[in-house]
Image 1 (cartoon, chains in turn orange, purple):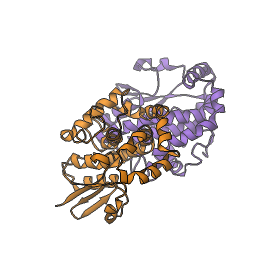
Image 2 (tube, helix red, strand yellow):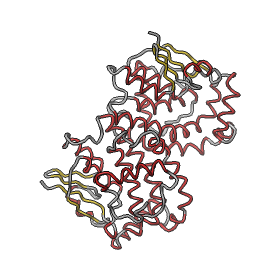
Image 3 (tube, chains in turn cyan, green):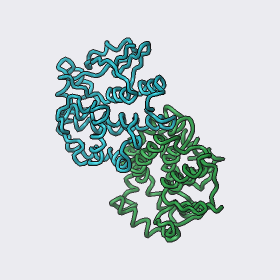
Image 4 (cartoon, chains in turn cyan, red):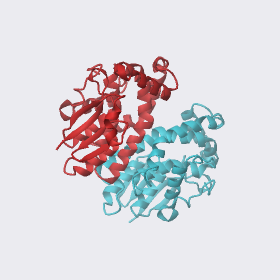
Length: 232
Length: 232
């Protein structure tokens, strides 16, 4: 059976999409391999067959699934014998809450502290699209946003509060073992790590220790990804 | 068997502690009744026997449990035949994440928009303690904080983002049915409702509809509590 994961491609084979990392780690959690199909920001016609304008997109035999959350639900239903991504209905609903927190609180804060570096790992042919779409989101130029990094660092520190507390009590967001909620949150830090040398967790030893555990999972799958600062 | 819940007492029998509401609703979820033992802010010697300086405290036969989270864990373990509060280990861990989000993001935002009203439902004998402890937390007088309500409303709107998204997709935070994560979040709104006529969810129809469902649970248990604006 053919299994393919369409993944966002940056310069020098960097893979920084936090949503694609969620999908990649969800596949690994289920013990599944998939062929890698990289797509640049301006190559999304590649996934038009899936009715999508974004990646990740998973093709699994006859099934095509777009969107990282839909991919996780699909994998949980299609591969019930593998380790569970959610541990039941409440776990699934609350993992979705973690995703909403990540998308509305953590991602915007991470985005603002790494945006000045992120643009340097975008492929040259994607730069016009990237700059226009991100500057619209920021309400300013990328250079103006990058100059405010130190102003935004405290916002990130504040956004991390629930994660810091959670990981002060248990090894993983999901409990004693990693599961989908961990992959959701980890995606944000892998996005930063693959694009920026900014020491995003320098003052966050508890979260940094969890990130190290996450980088070690599945034979070091995430650690092996090209990063700006492999030591970070 | 004797079962008692020590609950925070305000003026005119108001019960606004969000943590006590978590415990009260967790008991109801398990189908358990408990005698009500109200304690004012300056009467915490009443729960010294539990090694606690705060409420809620649950006494259940020979067992004494302080702290709302510990009470939820105790009830889940001691009453496995009642409806589950967590739906398994991942659900439990992620409900704890919701609690950390609530404590670090939602509560501070709610606190700042209702503090000017909250002081009016504190018993006269507790006012010196309440003012000193809350002004220390605020870094300003309660009156100064109350005057800034309109400045803080947007912070609350921002803090609500993950909850708004979650409840746009499902009836309850925990999925199709309410469970402990719902009681955690609901406590914040019941705190506001029992202390303030401020229309905290006027611009949040999705969250307001969920709150109405929560107020209806267990025969209208939370709706029956003395509130400033019973219509809110």
